[in-house]
Image 1: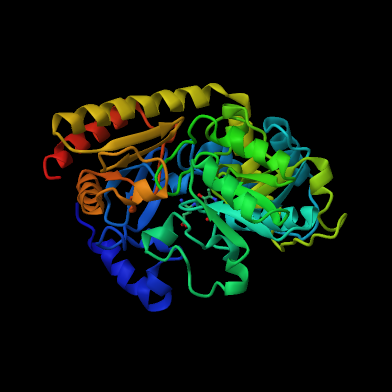
Image 2: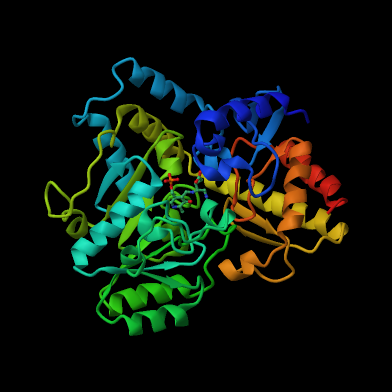
Length: 428
Ligand code: KE4
């Protein structure tokens, strides 16, 4: 593959944008080489600035569950834009998408829209602290809840990709209120709660982790967290920015049958436009301004274009729930294909998968938490990434990410992907 034009554009971008990107994980720093500049995308395919067609397994890090430029979403945005792009006033469409989201997701009565997953998680923690009148939070090493100060302690995704899971700029004062636990380790959570009796406002977790690769919760883990939260008056926050409206219509709460107190959303809920949201039962949400004392605001929150994209997306999913089964079957097919070719080539690996989230780890051990994810062979991953790219397959440029499957993928696309893996595996 030739990427001459992308490299030229990257050189120009670096002069005026730090690192040439507006989000670090796009920079290919972890895998080497210059990032690909995309010109346009349709369905399962990206078309880059050099005219290459790539099969996309990032899908904007999750939102494009129905494929790029999905007509109902695009048309909704076009129609809405003709009537104005932002008002800073309430609009009917905000109520429409709120009603639909509340009808799709268990345990939520009210929802507040913001502009990113970071904003949703940051606001959810502030709300939990305000509601419980306690300061400390528990997060899990390797989980990523966006770049708000409280979360950049052993964070996953781009933070760990660049070896800065604890970012400079986060004060000791902030860091001291963030307690760090091991994912899938209930005993560790119990010991932290014991050492901080009466001080913990919430536990925030990716109920299926996606920012250290895909790591599902072991049986009983989420249920154990629910019991601990009930016993100690701690709010359980499910960060479903990645899993929401992807792993099931009602997200992980529906899929695994464990109730959260607050749920955060992003990605799919915006249909590719900047939307985040957080939701809970009425008793909690009514603590938010202008009703209650917990302040949270945003000039572009509930932006009509973003709401139009999100509403069109949620309607598609709500009206065709067979999509979830179809996309899960495609992911299972891909899993089986990858396993076969990597075993044939005797490549040491382990694959984690749940629903339409899947990740390949070049490790002989099970990957169940951040520590075991970090043990995987990153050099092998780099070769794997570039080998796939050379064959027109675009996966996340980091070993600490999940592959995002889109319904737009055909089985021919999956076969092409598996074939590319088979060829790439020869040089691993
Ligand atoms: P944003 O602020 O990036 O919209 O959402 C933050 C966030 C919160 N919670 C979870 C579970 C998330 O996965 C994310 C963001 N995901 C990463 C990809 N793993 C965003 C990619 C990027 O930083 O560019």
